[in-house]
Length: 318
Image (cartoon, rainbow, N blue to C red):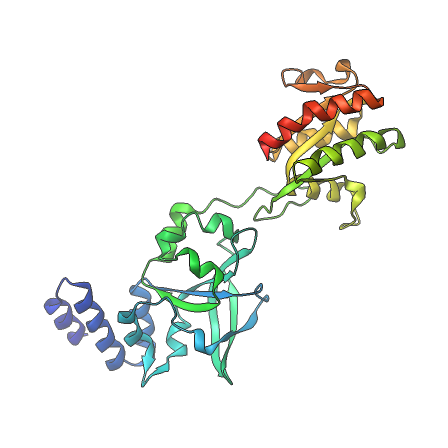
């Protein structure tokens, strides 16, 4: 303790000198004390893989270690040119998959790290207190963490001299409130080209749906209804999943279908752009009549008119 006191009293203000003292202390003090010193240094691991991370164990190329890491940090984590895996394991870690869209970023801690041939075998745990987010959201504040755009496309292991938790606290959104009767993904995963259609499950609406699909395709988007896929045993869960993933929701109020009204409420609650269409303006419920809607006829001419009115709105929202 006396040594630490003397070091503090003689410490210069330059970052280079401080790092030199940290390095000396790490060499002098036993392993248990080194970890406390490293935690105080406010550093973190950034580990990027080309494919998604497994749940609790994976591997990393050994020759990609300490890429995009400042040279001044290397003395803290190398002994005789060998990586001090025990030391780096005590830093908080960002587990990132290559990409700039809906790939998932996890935050956690390395439990163990060991050399396995030329690779580094990792065991780790994700921090349940920190919600995962998508790469496109993470990129918004990545510069604050010292991460440049190229690092999102390069498998590597870097160490950054930045307080990860402070940056996350400033930028992370709270977890999504989970409904009681169905589930929504957390983090939210929106497919930018997806348009979902809510309408009665009746063959008389099939020509309408086909016209909606053609209209969406002309804007390089794709339309889907809940009966187009089967991911959950519960039909309503598939409906909610489809709405939650969609960029745009088209809801046909024709015949005042109660399921469609319920789905409109879900879409509005989830913050979706909802386009209302109907063959009869009286089918628009009172609580939605303040919103714009498109009226159409069910014949060929009416469906073409629907497409003509719908196309510019879809293109604008996309």
